[in-house]
Picture 1: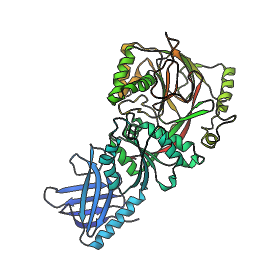
Picture 2 (picture 1 turned 90 degrees about the vertical axis):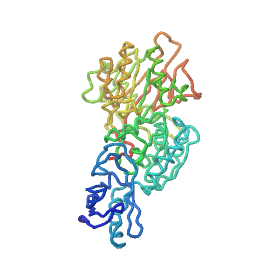
Picture 3 (picture 1 turned 30 degrees about the horizontal axis):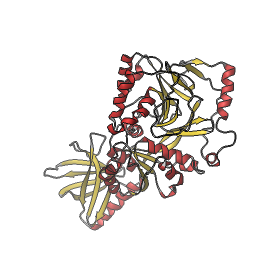
Length: 492
C-alpha cells in the first residue's frame, strides 16, 4: 500500500507543507499570511478534477462557502467551485503528485462518459440555461465527456433509451423533471436486452416541475437540494439500487419509479396543468381550490401488506383470495401480445398464491402509492419509504374534515401528516385498485396518475392535450414491485 506523500510547495502563491495520504486526503499548512493554518480537501467528496502543467497542479474543488480549516468535509452549507494551484519544487515532483492523484481519482470508479437527455420544455422552460450556467461547468471541471440530446416531443426520451448504444456510456443523465427519467426507465425495459440495459446507472438533475427523485436522492445522504449538488452526485458516481413498479391492466404495462395517485393528489397534479404558466405555485394554488370543493370517490382496493402492517383493512375471503391470486399471477403473461413488448421486461416473477390479501372499500378522498420519500422538492408523503426495500408506501385518506385536511396537506412538507388519525400509512408488496366515480356525481370519474402522467381517467374529467389514455378507468389496475431493479447515481 502506498504511503503518505509530503512536500514543501506553494498553494495559491503561499508557502506550505503539503501531504497527500493513501486515503485521498490532501492537506496543507500555510506558514504565514492571510491563509495561515491547516486546510484540507477530501478528494473523494470535494474534488472535481485537476490539470497539470509544468510545476503546477490546478485542483478544481466543490467546497462549502463557510469559512473553516477544512474545505471539503461534510455538507456545511451551499457549495461553490474553487481552484487551488499547487506549485511543486520541480516538474518531476509535479509529475509524481499528478500521477498519484490521477490514480486515486480513477480508483473511485467515477463516470467518464455520460449521455445527457435535456427537456427544454419542462418547468419554466429554463433547462438549457440551467445546463450551460450551472451543470456544464461542473462536468468540464470533472473532465467528464458528454453527449447532449434535447427531447423534441412526448416519449422522445423513451425512444432514445430504447435505441441507445449504452455500451458507449457510463450512465444516462436526465436534466429535467421526474417525467423524462420515467420515460428512460420504460425505454430501457422495453428492449430485448432489458436485463443488461436497466443496469446502466441513471442520474437526475432537477430542471422541471416535479423533482421528487432528485430531492429524495440528496436528502437521503444529508445533502441540500440544489442543481449543483445533484450534478456532483452524478460526478462522484456512487450508486444505489431503486425499486421499479410494474403498473398492469390486462396486457398493458407501464413502469413506475415514483408514485401512483388517485383522488385528491392526482386531481391536483393533472388538473393544475391548465395553470402551468404559474410554475411550481400552480400546485399550491390548485390544492386550495380542490380542498374547498372536496371530492370523494367510490371504489375499492386490495393489497398484500408488508410484515408488520397486517392490521390494516379486512382479510379477503379465503376462496376468493386464492382465485384472485391465481388471476393476478397470470395477468399480463398469457395470451398473444405485441412481439416487441413480449421481448421486453414482463414484470417481476410474483406468485401470490400463499399471500394473505386484505381489502378496503370506499369512498376515498385520496390514495397514493409511493416508492421514494419525496415526490417534489417540498412534498414528502412517504417519510419511511426506502429506495430498494421491495415495498410501496401506501398513504390513504378515507374521510376527513376540510379543516383537518388543510393541516394534513401542509404537514406533507416534513412528513408529519402520517401521524394524523385520518391518514392510513402502511407498506405493501402488491396492490390492486378498482377506481370508481365521484360520490354525488356518478356521471364523472377520476384520474389515475402514475409519475405525473395520466394512465386512466373517467368520464367528464379534465383533458389536457391527451386524446387517449393507455388504460381504462374502472377495471382493476395491479401494481407489483421488483426490488432494486434499477440503479441511480448518488452522492454516497
